[in-house]
Length: 317
Length: 317
Image (tube, rainbow over the protein chains, first blue to last red):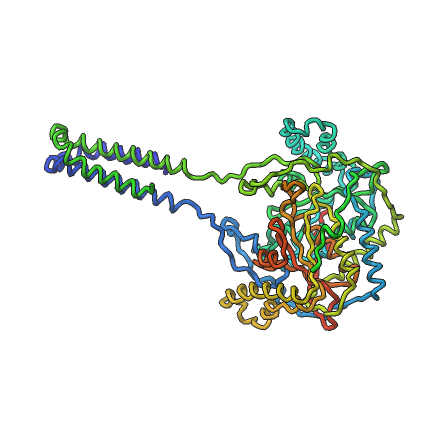
């Protein structure tokens, strides 16, 4: 009941009941006593209302929950579960504690081989660039499968493997994705017409119109699973799901580069919910990244960027 | 002024003023009129108080800030800059828009080579495991340098390269890090003494005591730069810095595995600020991960985990 309605009801009760019923009583009391009585009555009534309002107000202070102590690997101190997420059943055991430990089969290289391998891998990865101009040529599906398998070898908080890779090659679905992404990008674009970038119309237009979403033979949409659902419908916390999925994306980029394929790591603004529904993904999955994958177009260009030298990114102690 | 104090003051005014001043007036009025008057007075007074409270309440709804439109690559819709971070000068230009575009030097493999490469890389990465038992044997510094260089090839929001890799080989610094981490882990441990994990004392102890922090020839502490500082002391927003640094960590893990080295991806709870001060890192850097790096110990074991099959992590449309 809203506060003003309660006030009106109270007043109408005072006005109706006092004249008809209490007139006899009132005549025996002093006017002053009646006045004080009414003041106290209203005071008490309003105070009780205030308390009621306070009690109804939801408390938003996050509280630390007990979490499964599975491993110190990727423990979470940021993603504290909120009260409103506690509707379902939550399973608290992590699973790993029942596992046997087995010897780790190490493969060691001679020092000179090791140095050479580290140098070669750096050279290969250093050739990777974000490429926005893709060729429509088909790419063997087997390669894409191996790239996704590689991404799935990433470590994850409590080994939850909280990732879903949606690989889209259907031209109609790709086009639907393009429509959603470009519509949102156009809103971003039009809202920025007053900015200092307005003179760069041509360049902005290049960013707003995303041909590669139609052209690329594959679109890889990476979803993070914010929680898991185990047998019986219980929810399982996915600690550090965003960091885990991002690490997995790093392995995916390495695998693409190793296979001679290119992509551009994009995070489409505000498109997540629409694309999730379009692709039929469940509510616990949130879109983290969208990567168009293919061969580079023959005339592909990239900005003439440089990378920070080692001394700018590494500190040795 | 608190509400209860206002209420008390109002009542005391009613009690004091009414008897002494208004007695003459009251005698000429009907008791009912006085009662109604008092009710209306209190009603109006309390209503005005309520409005005042509402007006004072701070509004916490976050507002979107204008952001540099550099590129659709890794745009940010989550890390909205807060008012309290706006003290310093913020530079709004991204830098990339002045860059020339150059042809992308593509290197393409024949299809069968491509498939084989993707298979081999998956096999190599699939052998990676989080290993907690490291050998104290020295590792060539050149390999570590190449691994960090490889991590530095990751894409980043607006090419901000928001990472710092602190590589620690000094035994004394490693030991200081161990003391900080174990102290925090012991707090976690003792606070969980009442849990169902209390019976797993032996296993918990293994997690709390982190020998590898002394034993590993290198500790790599990965810091994310939450903002950058350009010439002139201006601050530069680092969009998506956590995702970018996590992707970079994925490349680092791939590079270590490629070189035959092992690590365990840890995120020490509550240790960030202490370790940042210990290592002399500036305030814009926050510890994201700590990776002990080395050869595996000869008797190293790992939990007998399996990974999800491809069909559980990939959806093809």
